[in-house]
Length: 360
Image (tube, rainbow, N blue to C red; front, side, top):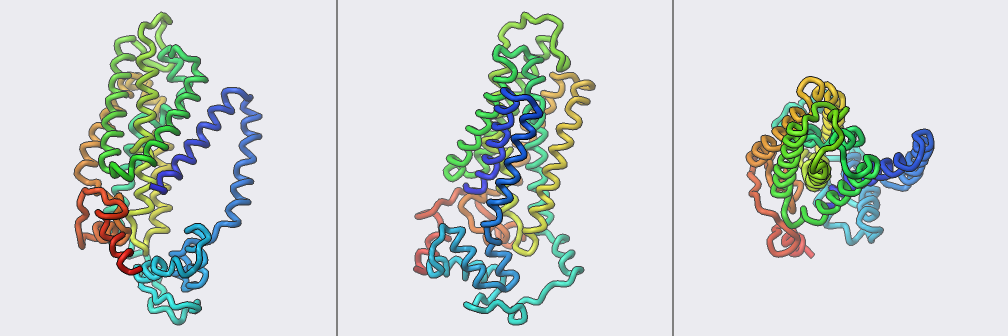
């Protein structure tokens, strides 16, 4: 659930840009944006390294302190069980005060051995799944809508001012993220993402029909300006934004932190982000060309098809990871076990939680 808040922060930034762009000159917007990286740089100084990285470097005391900081500045004793579990997963001893690499039971892998880790099933399978979700999230139409919102709203003759419509779009995206953070713990990732893809697919399909009937072939809009029912595309475009950010636009980033083994997680997360940004770049880059070749209705039909076919594909390949331990998830992608599609929550239906309770 917490992993979905990172995308919510991104969308909050997008909303801020929409607001600034509505009321300020683009030069002033650029000047305002200089503040954010400076603030982020200062704040990151106070964030410790991750416990898993510190454990892998045999800095056990620092790892304990980092874990305690991340859990809310709690005492070292209160995080000891969790720390020992992390050490067990990494194959480390984790004795207090031992920060010497020479005492580590695991020898440092050679470069060739490290590269071989990325040829195994437990890397290719989850990486392919993450890449697929990134593709669906960018080519379901939402990426282009977010980038070319002003032109699209102008083309469909939105009854709302195109700049205000863009701000509403940003607000709705943020609300979608909030809904995801709230609901994913109860619905699980499978259900909420299937609803997200199917719902956004239907929305873009309706917009495609409207633009086809209204003879809106390009972003310049129709020759006549007296379009009837022009609230229809505006409503369904905004609804598509909400549904996209309830699920499929957030899912890849959640999976990135869950599906990779400890040995490959750091590099695999970087590669996952890279393929995500590549797909995002391509979706934006080819959108105008697609509108020129296939027209605006054809482009929206393509986006709708991606969403609906993607939902069918994810139904068969996406396991339910909500409430499952990282160990269980990595074992699933290793092929040693198979995750069920039930949502586990803290308490009576979460065996991992019961195990922790029995240790206390």
